[in-house]
Image (cartoon, rainbow, N blue to C red; front, side, top):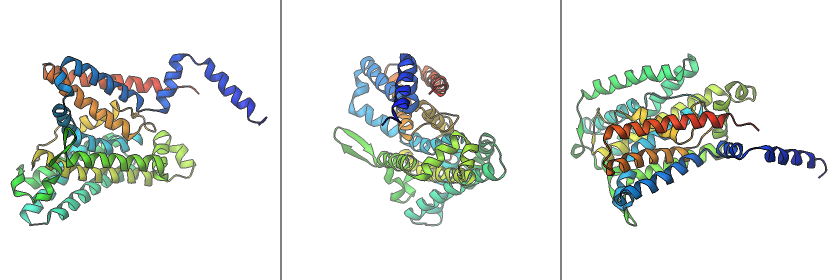
Length: 341
């Protein structure tokens, strides 16, 4: 008892010395999801006040369906950003996986479930290529994924010949993720449920497994992680591979959402997935954040677009509002990272 008393007293004294603003800084540093949660609640109240239709089950159901694809992609983006990386090939990998699966299912008669497995495998392989270039050649993730963005986009367009595959030509299981069903007064799609399950699975892996702890450690300080015995390159490669598999799974959700497989879908996926992650409180410098915050970030973007649209705001101002949110989120992150113990 006597041995721990001085330390406890010192900690309590240090806490008393902190100003209220510093205490807020400490809380936000320890719980990154608090900031996006508050923004989500405030935006809901504001938009519901401006137009009561915003809070209607129909409007909210549409928002949930709209953010499903970006929300899924943002899970993989979160994993990579947690390691202080970034992935600019998110949309290109998803389109490539989608077109390969759809074209083979239609052209070669591949069963729908095998086409889905193929899409996930293609996504994982593309992610592994990104990870291999980052870990083996020691290239910056930004440069690697900027290059593979063009490569995967070109391969997808060449393979599909720039043509869409209509939903009526696809096996029914590929469009299954777009089916809606009632949940109380809401109507959501199978894809929305899949995204929620994905968040639960990845959130559990990050919070409760050794792999998750290693991901955070590598993002926080690669050299310190290496000295602690963590195989940094293996962790990084696994992160890119898992993220790629998530993009492949998202291709299935995208087909259900769009009702077809189109090489021109989700053109803004790269920026939108990064936006959801950043607004969700995950640090661009790695080592801090959670998928819960990313989910909230995706919903915030959806709320802003839907709420401003119902308020009659021009589309360009909606884009402006999201841009301001990103800048504010990064500024807050910089401030939180300066927290002093």
